[in-house]
Length: 151
Image 1 (tube, rainbow, N blue to C red):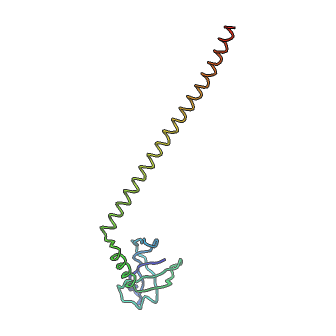
Image 2: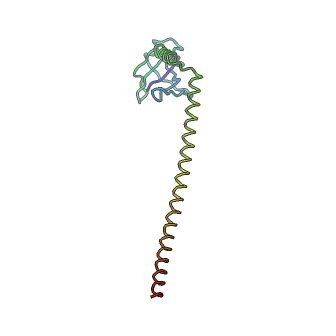
Image 3: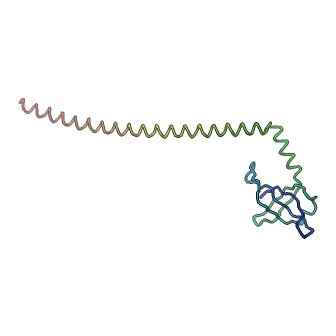
């Protein structure tokens, strides 16, 4: 698991520890850590207090790798500047996506309504068809009776 952390001093011990600030949830999604979550690591002593670092944690919360965050942040900034992703652009994209989702929901509801209407009409047509079949049999029966009376 990839985490963004800050180097701090552990109380009563002259050893640095890492306070986790955020965790990577997916390739482009991070979650801010609100609770106080720290990890001890000998390698953290090589960084100045207050430094931001990028660390990789195992499932058992063991620090697998620790590196300076500078290159990672510069990569993000370059990507954002090259593609023109400003906070306003991201907000517009979010709003556009939300409108698209709402439109799809409305279209889906409209399709569901139409399906129900068509089903009701199909049932009406089936009932009419049955009625016509009964009336046809009744007419044939009456026609046969009429022919018998006339003979």
